[in-house]
Amino acid sequence: MNFSLHPRLAADCHPLGTFELCLALVMNDARYPWVILVPQRPGIREIIELSDGEQTQLWRESSALSRAMMRACGGDKFNLAALGNQVEQLHVHHVVRRIGDAAWPTPVWGQGAPVAYAPEALRGLRERLLAQLPNSFRAAAAPP
Amino acid sequence: MNFSLHPRLAADCHPLGTFELCLALVMNDARYPWVILVPQRPGIREIIELSDGEQTQLWRESSALSRAMMRACGGDKFNLAALGNQVEQLHVHHVVRRIGDAAWPTPVWGQGAPVAYAPEALRGLRERLLAQLPNSFRAAAAPP
Image (cartoon, rainbow over all chains, first blue to last red; front, top):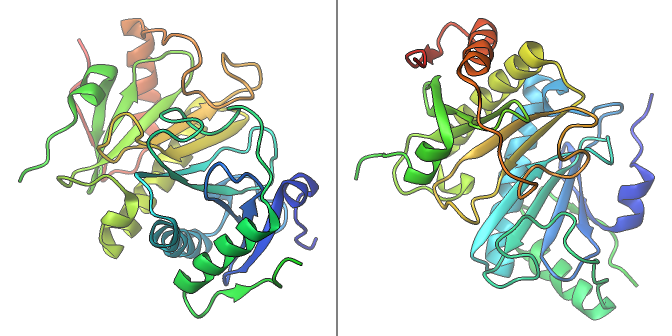
């Protein structure tokens, strides 16, 4: 069985690029800087289904992404979560929170409707994130 | 500065015990098996404020706890999150979810009022969890 991205994640997100293990996707919701990591392993629903080495790699990539997002976007708090109650493919949310943002101080899930990025805003976020990510991160093609 | 547990976490939870790095606390909400890990380091708000070694240790303990919770309690999905928008001291939620539970399929935060454990139910959960946790876990005293 080969890895393929869940169609719901593909529909809700823009590709940012790939770490060694994970795909990085920007959630198409301009209300918050929000990036999802998806380990490229087929059939995985839970973190504990990854091998110990894969878990270590996931958290290394999560840490690099978290630092890059806070540097690139600023913010007051960082939220990290692996939920997957609706989309079972393992995916880990990384969200920069700001006091007074659309959901503050509650979690972002299920709060109002997403606001799609304008192309220019998405390009700007992409460039700011890529400038902070490690050299080993392979960027996806720029959006049109 | 020494580590001390945030009074809100102390008020909302029962102590379960300690790993090498983290305190483990049972959230006093019998609707879901819900354990919180708190790294015993003072002044830490974000995972990326821990050293690389401490992050590795946090995720090792999180993985051991997650396996123990799923073995001890069964369940359909596991939810993991570090939010901290309301209680800034770094704490990582671990929640066993069941299809049809009080918040399913949404996240558990902000869904209705917690249901405090009856003493017998809390003792039962504690015993089931301790039976699945590694020998290095130091159990807190049993509740009265």
